[in-house]
Figure 1: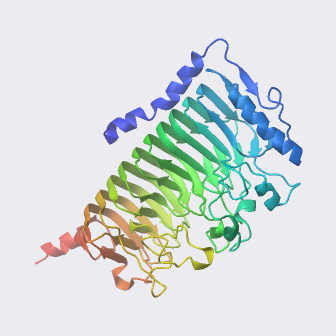
Figure 2: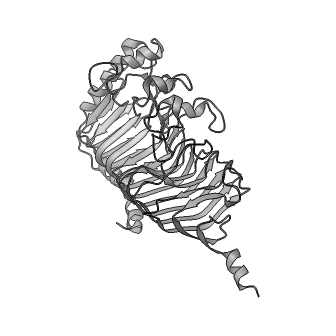
Figure 3: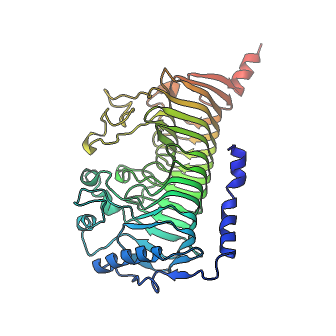
Length: 461
């Protein structure tokens, strides 16, 4: 599928949803979560939390083609493990708030009672909400933005210590699996315990007018306390095809809008993002035909972030019309994954948790290498403005066996670049066959300089 045909197809999703509503069966019903489902609002006692979770599972199981499930404009506290599957031609309307919390139990007791995939407290937790095998389903709200609150603080634990207790055995706020023709709109995802939203094996997905906010405090950046809300990814896509995300925003402590393995034909546009970036990865497969455009990134940690954890292919990627203000780490990173998956929280500099240590290049003895057979091809950055970065402009790193092919920086401008850690080179650049054009400045040292300034200088007598 070409990028042009994708752009024509993506706006059809809301039209299909509208047609589904207009021609819904005469027997279609609106199920009120409170009146019909028996949920109780405004009560976070343990008994009510458990009953509200069961009520939501039961009501979801009753939905038929053309039905709507309405969450009224109130706050409902509930337990996670919400699951539904095989829904077709239905709407789930969040006019109020679902909050996965209870103040009548301490955090550890609440977590201990969370539903799991097996016996014992160490068994894998179920997601807050998981949907499977959906067809033509809309997740929306009425006149205001509906809220899904994961109350993530209890899962994140004490800053710097909490990760030791649970690591990554924490629930995602919403997961949609093996589905097609899905619309997600006007939803606020707050304080997810783990990844916020994961689409896994979804074809024809639109996300619009939605927001994610995962933070510990009100700092206007990602301070040392905030970043300990580890793994709070924003909108993640894995094995997806034909995705359009627009007019949405993410503030979190990990990847903001993330294209994962085996995904193709994605446009992410008109978004705000602050976290670990507009991301492709980490990849050990094939990803193709991805566009990020018209984005603003305020005090983000990383900005443009493409990362391999193993061999694979990332092709036909465009980032364009992006502004970053004061990114806190590298504004541009195209290379290996800088991560520490499976590392102990007291040893985040480990060289065993990924191809590039989190502490590279500032901590002696740490490494950063690109995986063998990790191939970047046809990568374009166009009209990128980076203001006052706190570190050098970026990293462009491939393996000698599979150098990058056809990388173009067109009007990629770094204003007031920092000198650390790469000095006057501004980029760490190895095995990246690229060209700089237009007003690009500074030019990565391993690129061909075909900027306007260079061409003008070459024609002077």
